Image (spheres, rainbow, N blue to C red):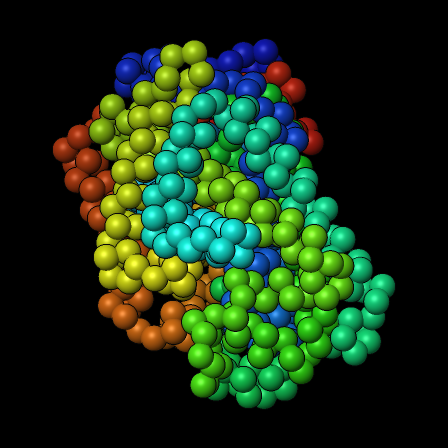
Length: 542
């Protein structure tokens, strides 16, 4: 295939003549111009769900790094910012609902592209599934605190699934508004708590020691070993990285945004840096609010991990006692309400992204074409969304049959799925970095830049590989044991990647039409959109 360049004012699909006619049908396009920069930022940041990230992932980081948990968030932020430099450069050249796999297929070829497609789709389906366990847990504990009504968490998991599927059936613009309201309230409440703790001086005065990233790797110094029996930097880094999961969603909404190239950069950097500063500040104040010598013990009480403790857990979240202490019980009530809306927001965002991955591959005949159809009028991927909903029901049912306790919805249904998804996504992001380097070195040479397309992706790749290594080294500690599901985490990801790889090879030899479609449904609309910083809009088909 030859490369195609867009002329100003023209709108067409890259290498359109080689994409099967049925792939260009109107009912296989997402609704263009349905969200602007703010809408995409809301969709991206709510995937991280700030309060859910702090109340769920924050204590996890403390489990691994004790009072040095804020340092883990600093390390993660630095790695993701560098990764984003290269990621945004690629997103300005190639935009489609497929995200990572589209980038990899253009950079390293269709075989690795399809392997990445299967893996990324799997990761986001895992995120969508595990988030239902989070929602069920918080619904149950909050209702118990408010009304004294003990509703089993597993029942509320299915309620969460029903609400998520129902809301996501409507067009993305409506969803963005719903998520935006919840997001503003979350950021405000987290900021108020942090500022009050800072002004009051915390439990023992404000210390900058928790902001030292080096202490993340010193379990003896950060008190994690003394309280939990061991320390694992991998746990802290997992908790921190998972708090940003979804930051790379911006390119997935490029086809639906008003100005794709102008939207991706601000949305990506805004979500990474904006929530990063918030996370670091809140985690720092969380540690200072309890005091460095007490924060690990407080988290242990949340998980019922203190030897001889009679209750399954002392409180729903280790944040609640400090909202009571520093602000008042009224803020605890607001936090209990917002953790519910935040969990739903994250569930909707993950569900929406998983649906778009399924839709994108179905639209290219990688998955059954029936999943690549949009709903008339709204033009959203409703069939792909319903398919993901079915998978969520099956996944949660299997975990509930294994352990139906409310706490298990947080520590097993949610945590195990998150581990599976994070490992797969880290591996694909490492491959994506390599694809970006190769793409600008060989295909889009006019956009080559020593920092943006060489050094940044190399550093980003190294950071992702380090994250994978740390997870593998600490899987048992991360999961509180080594059940079969956890032991299979790296092998399942490898199997799914290999499956996509083999299928692509088969298609290359026997189904040329399907092979040529991999990663090639790319919308290029150049009316000042994709001509950024003097760059020519190029989407190269290998």
